Length: 142
Image 1 (cartoon, rainbow, N blue to C red):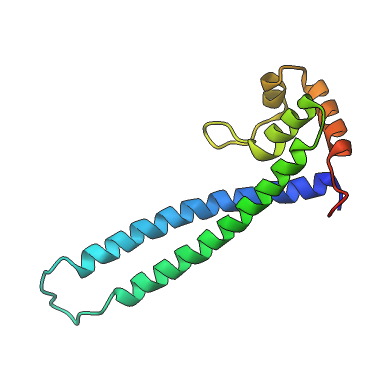
Image 2: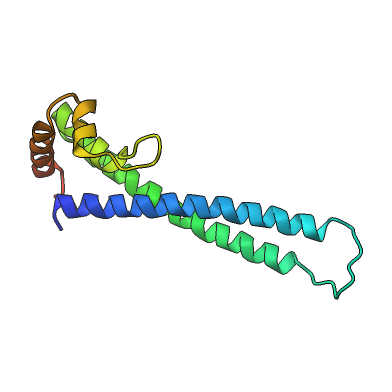
């Protein structure tokens, strides 16, 4: 596996973790609605069902998703340690913006132009630095 493949796989995992975080939020909101229905104390005209099973299922899903995020965090820690081992600051910066801190405030992935603006340099220079950084990215222990 090349450094670029390794970092791209991490970026894909990061995107999945972002989606999981959104899903956890949705599940927590659903659990609150289920609890509100179960605890409202109003009499029911139809057969009353026990919603505690639904709450347990939601909690199990949340725990499973949290485990996936924990795995992602471990992978990010490893990536950051590898990036820190690169001696050139501009190479570390480009890798951070390309793979780790790679989204703007709206959640959209940074373009090469936006990365270049942050460094600051030209788009072509940012891509050149990226190539050097990939060559210097420590992959010896994978």
